[in-house]
Image (cartoon, rainbow over all chains, first blue to last red):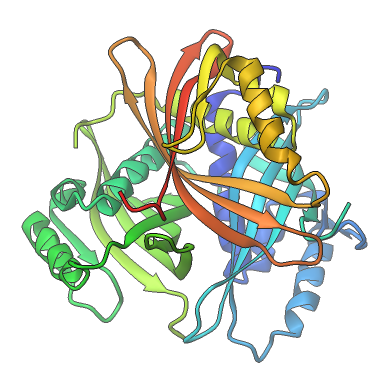
Length: 143
Length: 143
Length: 143
C-alpha cells in the first residue's frame, strides 16, 4: 500500500466536511446538502440508478425519495467510517468511505442498515471541500 | 452552508478529546470524565433531566446512574460520529455529534441504541479541550 | 486525565492509516494489510490466541481464518471509533480504539458485532505509520 500523500490537515478538513454534509442531509436540509456538491455534481445512490445531476437535480431527487415518508416520523442518521483518500491526477481526491444508515422511529430502537460504501470525487477549493461525484454501493447486493 | 472557520488541527484535537473523554466514561473512570468538563460544566443526559453541575455534581450523577447496574457486568461503549463544529462569538465552539450506545454483556451480542445527538459547548484552552455544557437528545423521542 | 502530547497532524495521520489498513483487510488484500505492520509486527486477534508474527505470518493467519468462508459470500466491515493515543518512552504510540465488526451477506441485513477494543503499538516513520503490535480484546468475554 503506497504512502498517502494527502496532508493531515486536508484529511481533517474532509472529515469535518462530511460531518456537516451528512448532518444537513439527515436534518432534511436538502439545499444545504446539494450545495456541498459542485455546480455540476452528480449523486448516484445505487449503481443501477440514474445519477442526479446538478444541485437542483440533487434536491429534486431527495424530495422525490422523501415524499413517501411524508407521514412517517422517521429519523435517519448516515454514519461514516474509515475515510480513505487518494490524490487524482487533476488535483481532486478519490474518497472511499464506509457508511451505515441508522433509522429510528418514535418509541423504537435504532435499525442498523444497509451497510454501504461511498465512492466520492472531492474538490478542495479555497472556499472548502465540494463533492464532484458520489456513487453509493450496497454490501447486501452480491457483486 | 457557510464554510467552517474551525482550523483542521483544532478539529483533530477535538476528535482526540472525545476519544479520551468517552473511553474514560465507558471504563467507569467518572472523575476523569468529570475533569474533561470546565469547573462549572453542566451535563444533561436528556432534555427533561435536571443538569448535573460542576465536576463533583457530574461524578455524583454518574454514580447514581450506575448504582442500578452494580451487579450487572454490562459494558457500554459510546460511539461518536460526524463531529460538526461552529465557532461561537466568545471563542468557544458549538459541537454537534451523533452518538450510538453499544451495550454488551458476557456471552452476548452487542445491543445498539439508543441513537442520540450530543450538543456540546467546548472551550479550547492552553491545556486542551474542555466541555462547558453537554445536552444529549434522543432520536426515539418524537420532537 | 493528562493532556495528550500527540500532535493533531499525527492524530489525523493515524486515523487515515487505520482507514486504509482496515479497508485493505475487508477487501481481502491480506498482503497490503500485513504491510501496514512492521517487519516483525505481531497480530493477536484475541487474548487467548497465539500471536501471528511477521508479515508472512500475518498473511498466513488471515488466509487460515478465511478458508472456512471460501464458499460464503460474506462481506465484513471493521468499524473503528475513538482512537486514543498515548506517547510511549521509545517514541512509539500506544493506541486504544473501539471496534465493531459489521457482517453482511447478499440480500441480508447487517449483523453488528462483536464489540472489541484494539490495543496497538504504532510506529511513526518517515514513510508513514506502521503497527508494531496489535491485541484485540472482546467485550462479550467477561474479564
